[in-house]
Length: 245
Image (cartoon, rainbow, N blue to C red; front, side, top):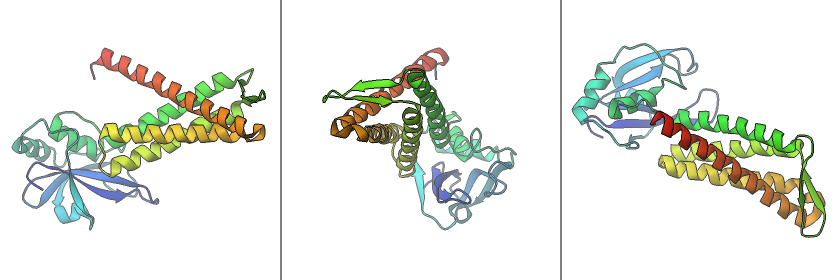
């Protein structure tokens, strides 16, 4: 660890076994500047930017250096940006958290990969559920199996499958990120888990139709996931072209 490094340490979300990474800026003298809630048990209750010892920041856990995204400023400027905000009030887990602050100090961009994962996957789950309702409304989605039987996937299958699959994607992407994977690698892990979960959920619906029904359902589930991901990717690309971000 060196002056200007972005440090991160694993912490547990109060009242659960879910872990997240707490971020800060290494001042180089044994202290760290980091945004934190006033009470970690109530992260939505407000907070501020503080300068504490590395030991207090670590809270007995291993500390590692974050490098993604790459720093845009030299170490001295990163530290100066961090120190200038010590004592600043304000904290929100979703829009103004420790990662937003540390990344801004190093890159000039207020970004939190952890918040983005949660918000993106929650929005995707809602979009997939709406798409599933549209696909299953009125006449159910019917798939002809190789054996001539018809597998019908209605709302009771499509909506839960969409939500379960997105939940699996969120868990996989979050876990990969916590282990130090890049944004792209963690996203791929999430997509793979979501694809598998969607195929499995729809495949289960095909059990009454036998092996051919399971296969048809699995293919349908995988296709629905891929189509949903492609639509989401196109929307994201269009947004970036408009906003430039």
